[in-house]
Amino acid sequence: MRVLIVYTTRYASTEKAVKLTASLLEERGHKVDVKRVEDDPVPEGYDLVIMAAPVYRDGPHWNLMEWVEKHRERLEEVPKAFFLVAMHLAGSVFMGRLHGGIAYSQPLIEAFEVPPFYGTLIGGEVEPEKLSEGDRRKMERFYLALGERLEKKSLYREEDVRAFVRRTLLYYDWFGKHFRRGELEKVKDFDFMEKIRELERNAEG
Image (cartoon, rainbow, N blue to C red):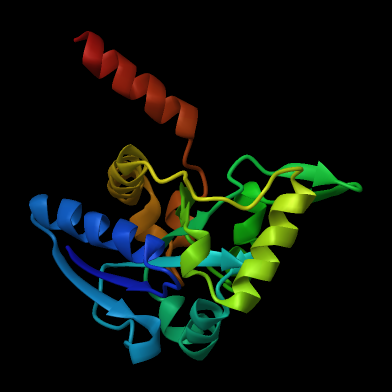
Protein backbone atom coordinates (compact mmCIF):
# COMPACT_ATOMS: atom_id res chain seq x y z
CA MET A 1 0.00 0.00 0.00
CA ARG A 2 1.22 3.50 -0.81
CA VAL A 3 0.73 5.92 2.07
CA LEU A 4 1.10 9.69 2.31
CA ILE A 5 1.70 11.14 5.77
CA VAL A 6 1.14 14.87 5.67
CA TYR A 7 1.76 16.92 8.78
CA THR A 8 2.61 20.21 10.35
CA THR A 9 4.49 20.70 13.59
CA ARG A 10 5.30 23.59 15.87
CA TYR A 11 7.78 22.33 18.44
CA ALA A 12 8.52 18.85 17.02
CA SER A 13 6.10 16.75 19.13
CA THR A 14 3.97 15.95 16.08
CA GLU A 15 7.05 15.26 13.99
CA LYS A 16 8.24 12.76 16.60
CA ALA A 17 4.99 10.81 16.32
CA VAL A 18 5.02 11.06 12.52
CA LYS A 19 8.50 9.57 12.27
CA LEU A 20 7.49 6.58 14.37
CA THR A 21 4.28 6.15 12.36
CA ALA A 22 6.23 6.09 9.10
CA SER A 23 8.78 3.62 10.49
CA LEU A 24 6.06 1.23 11.71
CA LEU A 25 4.27 1.33 8.36
CA GLU A 26 7.50 0.68 6.48
CA GLU A 27 8.25 -2.28 8.75
CA ARG A 28 4.95 -3.74 7.57
CA GLY A 29 5.99 -3.39 3.94
CA HIS A 30 4.14 -0.23 2.98
CA LYS A 31 5.66 2.52 0.84
CA VAL A 32 5.47 5.76 2.80
CA ASP A 33 5.96 9.37 1.72
CA VAL A 34 6.29 11.86 4.58
CA LYS A 35 5.59 15.48 3.63
CA ARG A 36 5.02 18.70 5.52
CA VAL A 37 1.87 20.59 4.59
CA GLU A 38 4.04 23.65 4.08
CA ASP A 39 5.55 21.86 1.06
CA ASP A 40 2.02 21.47 -0.36
CA PRO A 41 2.11 17.78 -1.37
CA VAL A 42 -0.59 16.64 -3.78
CA PRO A 43 -2.63 13.74 -2.30
CA GLU A 44 -2.95 11.81 -5.53
CA GLY A 45 -1.92 8.25 -6.33
CA TYR A 46 -2.10 7.04 -2.72
CA ASP A 47 -4.09 4.25 -1.11
CA LEU A 48 -4.18 6.03 2.24
CA VAL A 49 -3.54 9.57 3.49
CA ILE A 50 -2.67 10.10 7.14
CA MET A 51 -2.95 13.66 8.42
CA ALA A 52 -1.21 14.83 11.60
CA ALA A 53 -1.07 18.17 13.39
CA PRO A 54 -0.86 19.75 16.81
CA VAL A 55 -3.96 21.27 18.36
CA TYR A 56 -4.15 25.07 18.39
CA ARG A 57 -7.16 27.27 19.09
CA ASP A 58 -9.33 24.26 19.96
CA GLY A 59 -8.75 22.51 16.64
CA PRO A 60 -6.15 21.16 14.21
CA HIS A 61 -3.36 23.61 13.37
CA TRP A 62 -4.51 26.03 10.66
CA ASN A 63 -1.72 25.00 8.28
CA LEU A 64 -3.25 21.53 8.02
CA MET A 65 -6.76 22.92 7.64
CA GLU A 66 -5.64 25.24 4.84
CA TRP A 67 -4.01 22.31 3.02
CA VAL A 68 -7.19 20.25 3.45
CA GLU A 69 -9.28 23.07 1.99
CA LYS A 70 -6.96 23.43 -1.00
CA HIS A 71 -6.93 19.69 -1.80
CA ARG A 72 -10.36 18.68 -0.53
CA GLU A 73 -11.64 17.39 -3.88
CA ARG A 74 -8.68 15.03 -4.25
CA LEU A 75 -8.93 13.99 -0.61
CA GLU A 76 -12.55 12.92 -1.09
CA GLU A 77 -11.23 10.23 -3.46
CA VAL A 78 -8.83 8.57 -1.01
CA PRO A 79 -9.30 6.93 2.42
CA LYS A 80 -8.06 9.16 5.24
CA ALA A 81 -7.00 8.76 8.86
CA PHE A 82 -5.52 11.27 11.29
CA PHE A 83 -4.02 11.92 14.65
CA LEU A 84 -3.85 15.20 16.52
CA VAL A 85 -1.26 15.97 19.18
CA ALA A 86 -2.73 17.57 22.27
CA MET A 87 -2.19 18.28 25.96
CA HIS A 88 -5.84 17.83 27.04
CA LEU A 89 -6.66 14.29 25.99
CA ALA A 90 -9.64 13.49 28.21
CA GLY A 91 -11.68 16.54 27.32
CA SER A 92 -14.46 17.99 29.44
CA VAL A 93 -17.83 19.69 29.38
CA PHE A 94 -17.52 23.38 30.21
CA MET A 95 -20.56 25.67 30.37
CA GLY A 96 -22.58 23.04 28.54
CA ARG A 97 -20.14 22.57 25.66
CA LEU A 98 -17.54 19.92 24.85
CA HIS A 99 -13.96 21.12 25.16
CA GLY A 100 -10.72 19.27 24.53
CA GLY A 101 -10.36 15.58 23.87
CA ILE A 102 -11.56 14.16 20.59
CA ALA A 103 -13.78 17.25 20.15
CA TYR A 104 -10.63 18.96 18.89
CA SER A 105 -10.99 16.92 15.68
CA GLN A 106 -14.48 18.14 14.77
CA PRO A 107 -13.33 20.80 12.25
CA LEU A 108 -11.27 18.18 10.40
CA ILE A 109 -14.10 15.67 10.28
CA GLU A 110 -16.59 18.29 9.11
CA ALA A 111 -14.26 19.50 6.35
CA PHE A 112 -15.14 16.46 4.21
CA GLU A 113 -18.11 14.95 2.46
CA VAL A 114 -16.45 11.56 3.01
CA PRO A 115 -14.89 11.83 6.49
CA PRO A 116 -11.73 10.11 7.76
CA PHE A 117 -12.46 6.51 8.68
CA TYR A 118 -10.34 6.67 11.84
CA GLY A 119 -8.69 9.27 14.02
CA THR A 120 -7.33 9.69 17.51
CA LEU A 121 -5.33 11.92 19.84
CA ILE A 122 -1.67 11.47 20.74
CA GLY A 123 -0.22 13.09 23.83
CA GLY A 124 2.12 15.98 23.25
CA GLU A 125 5.04 17.54 25.08
CA VAL A 126 5.52 21.03 26.50
CA GLU A 127 8.84 22.64 27.27
CA PRO A 128 8.04 26.21 28.37
CA GLU A 129 11.53 27.52 27.67
CA LYS A 130 11.13 26.63 23.97
CA LEU A 131 7.82 28.41 23.49
CA SER A 132 7.52 31.73 21.74
CA GLU A 133 6.28 34.56 23.95
CA GLY A 134 2.87 34.43 22.30
CA ASP A 135 2.54 30.66 22.64
CA ARG A 136 3.71 30.82 26.23
CA ARG A 137 0.94 33.25 27.14
CA LYS A 138 -1.65 31.06 25.40
CA MET A 139 -0.43 27.94 27.19
CA GLU A 140 -0.45 29.73 30.53
CA ARG A 141 -4.11 30.65 29.96
CA PHE A 142 -4.86 27.09 28.83
CA TYR A 143 -3.45 25.59 32.01
CA LEU A 144 -5.09 28.23 34.20
CA ALA A 145 -8.43 27.12 32.75
CA LEU A 146 -7.56 23.57 33.84
CA GLY A 147 -6.56 24.71 37.30
CA GLU A 148 -2.91 23.90 36.63
CA ARG A 149 0.39 25.67 36.02
CA LEU A 150 2.43 25.72 32.84
CA GLU A 151 5.48 23.54 33.39
CA LYS A 152 7.53 20.99 31.51
CA LYS A 153 5.29 18.04 30.79
CA SER A 154 5.08 15.06 28.46
CA LEU A 155 1.97 13.03 27.65
CA TYR A 156 3.65 11.33 24.69
CA ARG A 157 3.54 7.53 24.76
CA GLU A 158 5.12 5.47 22.01
CA GLU A 159 2.48 2.81 22.58
CA ASP A 160 -0.25 5.27 21.57
CA VAL A 161 1.44 5.73 18.19
CA ARG A 162 1.81 1.98 17.77
CA ALA A 163 -1.87 1.54 18.61
CA PHE A 164 -2.81 4.19 16.04
CA VAL A 165 -0.89 2.34 13.32
CA ARG A 166 -2.37 -1.05 14.29
CA ARG A 167 -5.92 0.24 14.30
CA THR A 168 -5.54 2.30 11.14
CA LEU A 169 -4.36 -0.76 9.20
CA LEU A 170 -7.00 -3.00 10.77
CA TYR A 171 -9.88 -0.62 10.11
CA TYR A 172 -8.59 0.13 6.63
CA ASP A 173 -8.89 -3.56 5.86
CA TRP A 174 -12.32 -3.89 7.47
CA PHE A 175 -14.02 -0.83 6.03
CA GLY A 176 -11.68 2.14 5.62
CA LYS A 177 -10.60 1.29 2.08
CA HIS A 178 -14.15 2.12 0.97
CA PHE A 179 -14.20 5.53 2.68
CA ARG A 180 -13.85 7.36 -0.61
CA ARG A 181 -16.30 9.09 -2.88
CA GLY A 182 -18.56 6.60 -4.63
CA GLU A 183 -17.78 3.60 -2.41
CA LEU A 184 -19.38 4.29 0.98
CA GLU A 185 -22.43 2.24 0.00
CA LYS A 186 -20.24 -0.88 0.14
CA VAL A 187 -19.84 -0.54 3.91
CA LYS A 188 -23.14 1.08 4.92
CA ASP A 189 -24.25 -2.18 6.58
CA PHE A 190 -20.91 -2.95 8.22
CA ASP A 191 -21.51 -4.34 11.72
CA PHE A 192 -18.55 -3.58 13.97
CA MET A 193 -19.69 -5.85 16.82
CA GLU A 194 -20.38 -8.75 14.47
CA LYS A 195 -16.82 -8.35 13.16
CA ILE A 196 -15.53 -8.59 16.74
CA ARG A 197 -17.60 -11.71 17.37
CA GLU A 198 -16.22 -13.23 14.17
CA LEU A 199 -12.67 -12.59 15.36
CA GLU A 200 -13.49 -14.13 18.73
CA ARG A 201 -14.88 -17.25 17.05
CA ASN A 202 -11.79 -17.57 14.86
CA ALA A 203 -9.52 -17.15 17.89
CA GLU A 204 -11.37 -19.90 19.74
CA GLY A 205 -10.69 -22.12 16.90
